[in-house]
Amino acid sequence: MVTREQILQIVDFKGDSHSVVSLYLSPSLEKLKYGDFVAEAKSLLKKIEEDPLFKGEYWKIIDFLETRFEPSARSVVIFSSPKSDFFQVYEIPIPLKGTCIAGKEPYIKPLIRLLEQYERYCLVLVDGKKARIFSIYMGKLEEHTYILDEVPGWHKQGGWSQARFQRHIEQQIYEHLKKVADITLTFFKKEQFDRLILGGPHEVIAHFKNIIHIYLVRRFVGSIAIDVNASIQEIEKRAISLIEKIEEKENEELMQRVLDNMGKMAVAGIKDITTMLNQGRIQVLLVDPDLSTEGWICPKCHFISTTSAKCNVCESDVKKSKDIIENIIEQNFELAGEIHFLNNNETLKDLGGIAAILRW
Image (cartoon, rainbow, N blue to C red; front, side):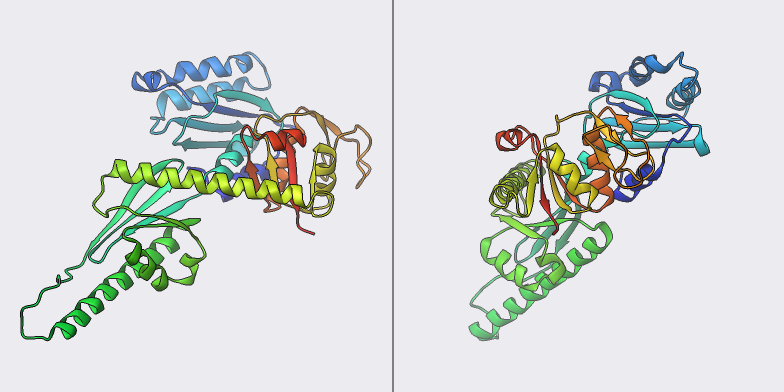
């Protein structure tokens, strides 16, 4: 799976006088089953097969797929260029739109969208005796840890007084929850997940939340009442449903922030967006994933414009871009700004398909 650091390395690669081929290969499950992904690749690459600028990359990619590659994911992304023998391959666990784009720079908009759209979640199911820790990424749930502590049940027999025995049980439950909290923190340090969901009996979740490290408290986004012994299918169904509600609510809140601050700390429309981006002022970018428009970009300082005049910064000649939305997304990504892709959002469409919340 591709990481933010890897995408930044791809962003830094500039084709200069060399060509670069960006291939997004996502064959159907039927084609994957019968190993027919090479035929799919040849179909997408057909437009560069006889082009002298890209013919070498065509055969490099085909040779790799035929002799050195066995896909283990639904999509494969390949970047290939003769410059410094640049050849990068990434496997993606969800289907992407198959496409091949050849040009001076890698086509990375789909990867940025993936990285910004799918955050890494940790789900901890816990009760007084057991705990299970899961990761959730791109709609896929994976179990990592199972914890079972022998905590005695309540009874009225034995040499201890009832109150003393109850305190003993409570102490063991606390130690169990503390152990789970420590393991969860270790898991966070290793996996660096973005968000935390807790599941189990409400009372136990409340106690557990008071025990976990502040790093985890800051990432807590919601909880589900579910039996720790529930099936993987039930856990995944409940968790994904909660995630969808959380993210839908967040997008609505971001859109409302734009409307409430329009003309002050928020702007919309391609012209105002490029102005604010060129000043480095965009904190959160909201984009209709289907939005595309032509524009101009400076090849030296990467100033983006909706007109064909000279660069306002270095006065160099600007070059035409088939899609400056991709350039905007890429630059905001490099500047560590947030990017949210809002599907079928009528409010955003009415604002021109693109809006932003500003840093200052």
